[in-house]
Image (cartoon, rainbow, N blue to C red):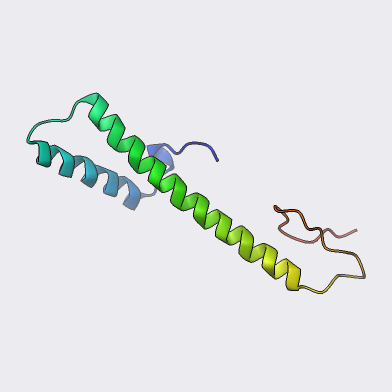
Length: 90
């Protein structure tokens, strides 16, 4: 999965990032340096990416388990690869 940018974030995620930056600025009592800004942004983006990857993995597991429960179509076996989203129709 490619690294997220601020443009890829939802509005609520962007607001949360701005809130984190404001909280950190208030806590330190001064404006943040570029390095501090970038570190906070990187930490937040890493957290978001982990959450999204976990959600994607959970969806994949759900889809694969649903495929395992489906009866074979026309006697053809269902592919068992990890990224299978739908059965192959020949």
